Image 1 (cartoon, helix red, strand yellow):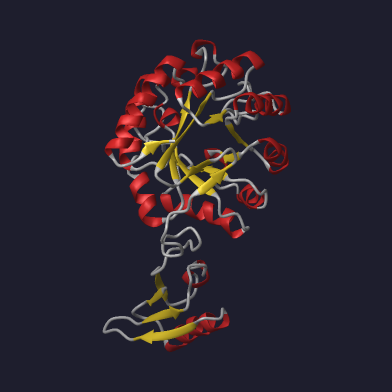
Image 2 (cartoon, one colour):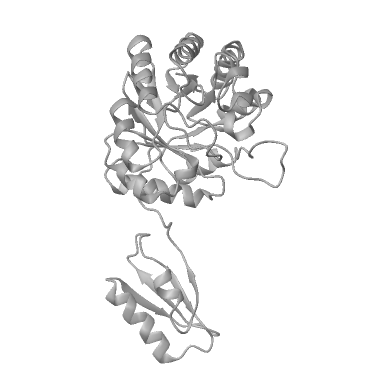
Length: 339
């Protein structure tokens, strides 16, 4: 970290900054300049809060020379992290994991029909929400604990791993009892208390990027989970807000290779939320695999027209089966395979 001083900073200002650096346990190096001086912080591993210096008299700017996150950085772990999921599944290696299913658990008949369909097409894990955060308080909020019981029954019959969302700290304990992967949704990406609790839950965590979050924001949120002792974090690009209302969100395919250059964690893509339109999901799923995504999160419903949530972006089972064939060809073309 470099702390750039104002051109009119006094010797007392410089001494105050240097004293704080030493007080925080770091070494300081004075770098004199023709127009202004700078102080270098030696030994900072990325955890030092720049806000401690920006308010000091005489400080013009703080320049980060290291990433603000540490444990998720590729410098910390050069080799990719492979997250193991119960059932002999993993994500982060050569195989691309496809997780598919409805937005939410609606009924026993609905979830079993959909689970059997996605399994027959080649999906290895089922996504479905028992607890659903919704923009409107009058929208379907999920079946709660009853939905978790249905997911447990589906896993027993099909062997599919279960990915489902925890909305709060109390609900996380219930979800962790059933889920093979605990999902932290986009709205909760910066719910730091929930992230810390997820870090202590003992289950892999699927962390979705928030609609207004930068990649640094996403990686810092992942750092919360890792800092609590859980290295098994899967990132997910699910689309960010855009000025263009043609699609629900803007699926940031750039984020996939960018995150891979910055972090060792695996990253999935969610083309369903990324577009919000059924007709666009296959194209963006293909693009994500070509861009290097380690997995896909795709909404599929046995009867999308009757779905209680997100029916417009849910594929019909036959569409999903056709897409899986296309994804296998694309994966082969880029030296990978569909799990």
